[in-house]
Amino acid sequence: MLAHLSTLFWWPGISATISRRIIKFTKDKIDTSDDESYSWWFFDEMLHKTMFENFDLSHIDIVSYKILTEKMLRIGVLFETIVSALFLGFFFIKRGDFENARAMTALLGRIGVEYEHSQARLFQLLVEVRIFKELGKLKETIDSAHRGILLAERLGFKEMHLEFITLKTQAQVLDGNLEGSEICLDHQEEIRSNAYLIPYYLSDYISVRSLYFVSRLEEAVESGDESRIRQFDRESRKWGSRSIKASRKFKRDRVEVLRLMGTRSWLMGKRKKALKWWADSVETGERLKFRPDLSRTYFEIGRRLSEPNSPYRELNGISSSDYLNKAKTMFEEMGLQWDLEQLERVMEHLD
Image 1: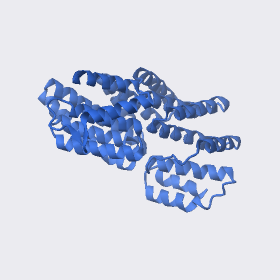
Image 2: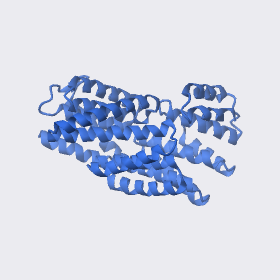
Image 3: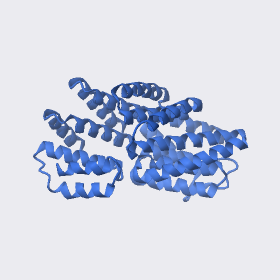
Image 4: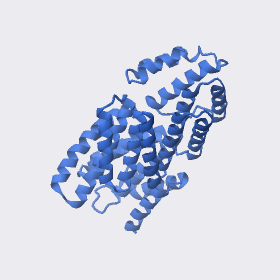
C-alpha cells in the first residue's frame, strides 16, 4: 500500500523524485506472493517509468505479466489492470512492436466485454488509434479518434477526450488538412480552458501545437509569404520551446519534439542549429529505443541534407543517402507503409 502513495506525487506532477524514492524504498518490502499488494507496486512502478523515467518497460516479461494480469482480474483489481495494459501498449508502440501492442488491445477488449467495463473499451480504442497513427493509417486514425472523442465525452473523461483530439489533429496535419486540424485545436483549447489537466496530459496540448505551427511555417516558406513566415516563426518558436521543456519530464514526445525544432531551424535558414537539434533527436531516439520516431528523424535528416541548396551533406559522419537508407530499412522492418511512400517520393526526385 505504501508504494501506492507515490501516485500522490507523480500523478499531479508534484515530484518525480519523491515518487521514485517511494517506489525504490518499497521494492524489497513487497510480498510477491500477495498478488494484490504486488500488483499495486507493479502498477505504480510501470507508470512512473513511462511518465517520468526513460519509458523503458523491457524488463517486464510478457508471459509473467499475463499471469499476473489474470490474478489481478480474479481478485477484482480492474483499474490497475487496464491502466497497466494501456501503458504497456504505449511502450510497445514506441518500440515499433505492433504485435504486442495489439495483444494489449485484445486484453482491454476482453476486459471491456467480460466485465462490462466502459473505461477498458475506451482504453482499447486509444491504443488502437495510436497504432493506426504510428503505422501511418491516417484515415483509420481520424475515424477511430473521432469515435474516441465521442465516447470519452459521453463517459466524462476529459484527459482521454483531449488525447483523442491530439491524435486526430496529428493525423490531419500529416494528411495535409491544416484547416481541419485548426478546428480540432480550437476544440482542444475549449476543453483545456474549462478543466484542470495534469501536466502529463497538458503536454499533449503543447506538443501538437508545435507540430501544427511547424507545418504552417513550412507551408508559408514554400509560398514565400513573408507575413505568414514571421507569424508562424513566432508561434512555432513559442510552442517548440514549451514542448522542449515539457518533454524533459515526459519523454514520450521527446524525439519528435527535437526533430521538429530541427526542422523549424532548417526552414528559417539556421542550418547549423538544425543539425544540432537533429543530432539530439537521433541520440535520444537511439537511447530510448523509440524506433518509429528515430526512423522518422533519420528520414528528415536525409531528405533535408539532400536538398539542392543544402550547405551540408552529412551529419555525424553519415551521408544524406545513408540516412535515407537507414530510414528505409527501419520503415520496412516495422511495416510503416505511409512513411515508405513519403521516402520513395523523395528518392524519385533525387534520381
